[in-house]
Image 1: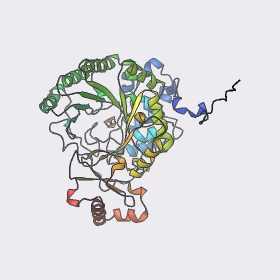
Image 2 (image 1 turned 60 degrees about the vertical axis):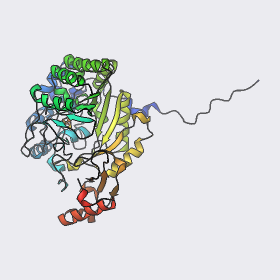
Image 3 (image 1 turned 120 degrees about the horizontal axis):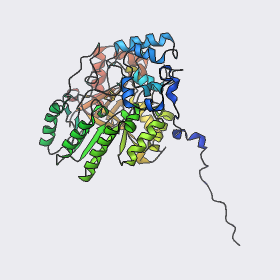
Image 4 (image 1 turned 180 degrees about the vertical axis):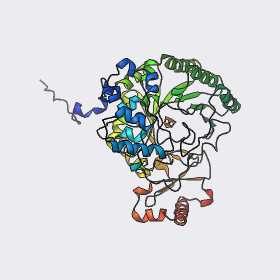
Length: 458
Ligand code: SF4
């Protein structure tokens, strides 16, 4: 008789306790916030209530979290609000997801509530519109950079305002520091964008962003979706919204909005055209049982959701957090699509990381799950080079923190530079950046090492 050997396992089973990407915040967690202690589930899940109770001033923040933080924290926030280039707006859902026992380190607080005490001087090469979206804008509210793709910006408001927003030149109300560029906000304004797209047969892919498409009235979701789908050469639409990360309950309770998106997706499917949602989760703590229910509803309706994360210091710049984020997203059927380098935007230097951080993170995240759910780590090359694989620099001067990229299919012959935050560099390099003449020399030398000449800098 043959005796069967027990199966040989090359890998021991994993301790289920380590699979923490599956453990979401459950229950009525918001009641820990003094202002929401008496708020029941129906009220908290109401997106209109969420919008009305979003915090926009230090006073509202103080009233909401009174007793949870030291007065010094509120003073710090008040000074931070005053100098921020972005207006502040934080949803109750986000406020309830912050660990108020440790607000300075909390990854959600870092994204939405500026503090004066942690601010760092801007990099000398920062500009407000670092991606030069306005230079590639043929009509108001439309950016046409890549051959077959356009970015349509039909509004300038969002359910929250992120401190690190790429479009701080246009998004939200004016601040002490910045008068915002006007985007078209009505169907009449959008007509020029539709006409331009219809006139350019190469355009197949339209991203509808803003602002945030969560803020579009359902009738305008339908108007924009159906107008674009009716253009024969348009093949793909992406509705961009941070909503699922910062106010997921809207998908569950604003049935008119969710039905409007569903209708556009179904209309697209009937025309054999793809319509998807692109969203923006940055940290696993943003995901709760409410998110799970919202993503389940979209999945049941056959709506694809892809995620674009921004790599932010103290939010997701360590391997454990980034891996947990990726795995939690895929667990909810959200495709982790991109991890962007933080753009070179004003007033948030303490949130940026180096190119090397992204390279190292990618190396560690790859292999932790299937390739199709492994995000591509990219640098959106400043001055309009478009998205580049972060590893694809022509040259990277790590000492001075200068990475040089080219973009042959977007702007052939041009060179694009990304700068690491100065406070992450050594003392000698920091001294060089303090001298404008030395800055020019360092940049010229890096471009030459990349094979270009300084005249070819974008
Ligand atoms: S939701 Fe998007 S567009 Fe709005 S502030 Fe945040 S990053 Fe900017």
